[in-house]
Amino acid sequence: MVRIVDDIGTVHSVKVRAESLYEATLLGLNALSRVGWEGDGETVGSVLVEVHYEPTSHEVASQQSPSNDASKGDWTAAAGQLSRYL
Image 1 (spheres, helix red, strand yellow):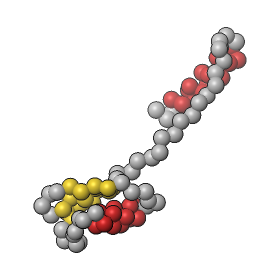
Image 2 (image 1 turned 30 degrees about the horizontal axis):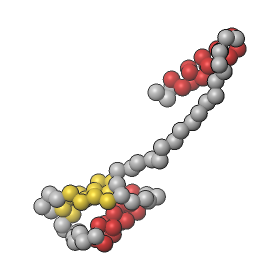
Image 3 (image 1 turned 120 degrees about the vertical axis):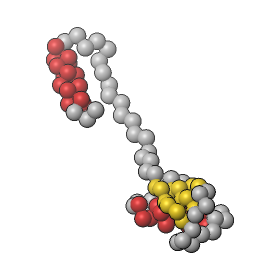
């Protein structure tokens, strides 16, 4: 999402896909100009680029009943490793 605030405080925004901050800014400015926004370097108060990642999901199969000690140990170790990222 590229959001531009013009010199009178009006907010204009557009969604773009880009590989870098600078590419997103340029694509956003171009997209806004195609829909009628007119501005030069002096009418842009600020440009905000919001980065949104595509959702990612992972599914881990588990046993119906983790009754044996080996599987409990595996899950306990995995949970310990996961806590480092939270």
